[in-house]
Length: 202
Image 1 (cartoon, rainbow, N blue to C red):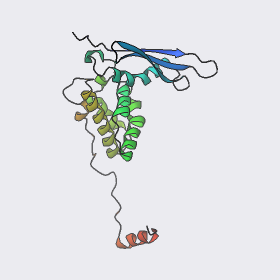
Image 2 (image 1 turned 135 degrees about the vertical axis):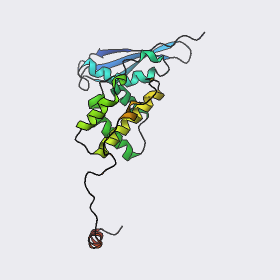
Image 3 (image 1 turned 45 degrees about the horizontal axis):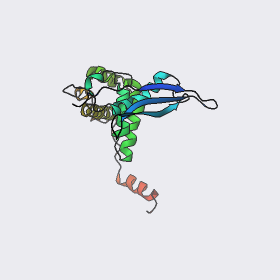
Image 4 (image 1 turned 135 degrees about the horizontal axis):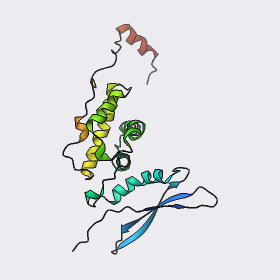
């Protein structure tokens, strides 16, 4: 009979260093090729990078999600959206440079600062919609942020980290997301010729 797979939390310890900053080390178990389990250790960062244990544990969260990909879902009630974002960045970020840069900017500047500490099951559509209403950004920018959150929740569903039937971001509306904030400038023939004259030959 196959043994039951339990959720693995690992252990985080602080290793003292005499001549440099102390180091956070994460220890966990990994299935060995010869059978049984082997204990592994992973360097997380120094105390210059993560000053408190809470900060170091946030850095570990994405690692735990990957370690427990095949474990029973009911153990995952403590998964934060920040940890989910970290796993998405590590495994699913688009390869195209411009898209990758845009997604990272939206995650690091907007999504994680606001929702990173929330459990994924606690992020509700009306709260996100209210956040967008208060945000001093263009409707198009808000729509892009909404799109990134939607994609991350889709990954969470595929990874079986939550079991709601509907992606909560599907119900979030962004008002006037298809409208321009200001009328575009239309060039006359003379203006176009003047701009063209300033461009060097390729």
